[in-house]
Length: 376
Image 1 (cartoon, rainbow, N blue to C red):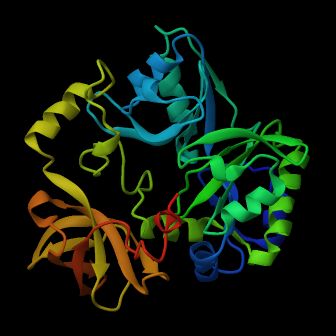
Image 2: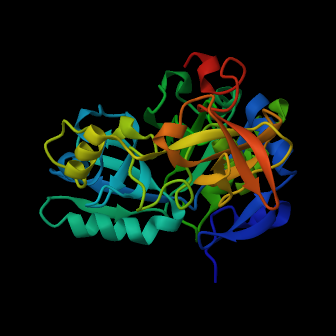
């Protein structure tokens, strides 16, 4: 039987449900396109309680996380976080994650729903020589994402603390009315937004989570807030150029190939996959992830071939129609010589080929959309 989140009753009443990563979740409520537009132009709310969450605590917590992830955990101040990846010994990506420092010796890690078991096994397997405790708390803490240019205004109405003071990739303990929570400021849509962790809200006793969810919806009515499903989440993250694990990054992909080299801090003394990644950086990745915008009508999809003249040189890993740019967009992998912005390629969609152009990320105009326009 699929798992459920604290908001299952709301979803089953209002959403169109599918099974995803072992959970029953809404694919859409009002519709994928209006939900995408709500997030880009005002605000939307997502139940992301299916994501994995773990607390890593102890004297060696920072050293342990620096060993199992590529970014510089020891450099994080309390209340700050970053995006990172865990790699295997060959430099392949086990998962992409968010790490936030809660206290001097405690960290929160958020990882992908489909990788819960794999990630926890990897963490526990590599923790043996460290003085750390790993607590899997996914089922005890709900997690909502409020995303869009009006997200801050809504959250401020239900939060006792000043959320404007939370920097991007920052986090803070707060009170949502009389309910204790933790709020981070990241997001998987490209927009300014917050993740609300409702503490002590197990799936079996969801009242605190439901109260917070309903408060956000009620205070968001003046901004026409929309509950959003997995469909809009996928379109929005692709418009922002963000990777989906299992499609755009896998254990066969290195962070350098995925153009996530900014999370690889090779100056660290030791981390899993370090030697392989240093060598690849020196030699250059042979193929890299690129953005592709269709110049002809049509929608690229995962597994479509990327052609140069008549030769297949790569493969689409994610593709969709973008409501924001009003065109087909995709990302995929091509040899480095074909990765220059402005490069012309073709994408094979069923029995025809679409003209396409290599582009950077995000796909949208950052002066009109995305967190950059807020100046935060």
